[in-house]
Length: 443
Ligand code: SF4
Image (cartoon, rainbow, N blue to C red; front, side, top):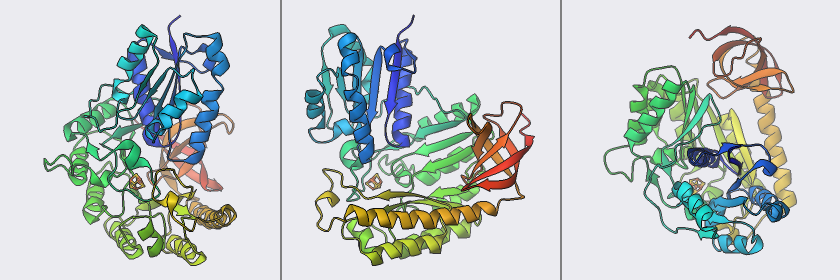
């Protein structure tokens, strides 16, 4: 029986994709994936320190392996991801969990296979956290697990230092991949049959600035427009200070680009935006929305919002609600502010009590969900093109999204995962849609 691995992934899409690269490295070493800790020869915790509960989850799961490791000493336990890059975390982790074999940071993830080999050969514990931005070596080819969707990194790190965010401290400054590498990767994915490709970066609009070879996010989108084949192109995430009408035009002119732009507003109050160091005002943000609607009138816009940032007053919060009403977001990821150690906002005076934060987020979510439910009703009777992504066992239905990101469920006798299908919407299930299959893609 071959060797097996299991990866626990915490946090954002960036980490999910990094886990695909770790899986690629392990697969190259002859390992295959398993589904339980008991079967595994290598267990990897790809951690995240951006969200508080992701950290708590990781700790709970690492701690639970103590007994297994005592029974199976050859089991290799690896902890990596951005949590290990934070302050003295790696040292503390190593002390708290002496049975953890390898602790590595975000900058040496590319050397995953070499580090694991070294651990197995020497049997010595490895704790290695590099403190600088490495070259983008692209040693690990991802073992993708989310067909028909694929994620492609275009830029690593972030230069923005929003005062609530730990990312620039744990993932370093912006480093763009070479355009030809990105375009080559997108082309191969299209050839392999992937139907939705999301370009990933903490701030995709900054793409190319560090390369100093004339590359930009707009030129990258324009080059991807020339790739033949049917696929949807998405981007995650834009930054309102860098997003401009040129980007909107490039999206409009790209036949593959979905008409959905994720533009994180974070707050509707200028005072709070300044404290967050977001470097735009509410009026700047609204001007970007206007530019999007001017270039791409049917474009849907989604956002991220933080509630309960230090010193946020009821008036500031009302401004956030007003922004939602003005823009009409087609979706909002809403977060309760929680201080992250090492960030400027964590030491600010005027931290908001939990009960106030909870009450505000409930009001925001209630408003946004109500708006999205109403928007969903507008779909009833329409036929929409859905990319079938998965099968929901409980509902006994396939599910997928339209280009605007709207989720729809429908029945099908044949397996349609990976196909673009036409679905006539009959009703809504809260914010999602329920429809009947009309026609499947003719390939
Ligand atoms: S843009 Fe701001 S919120 Fe986004 S990763 Fe950079 S510092 Fe964090």
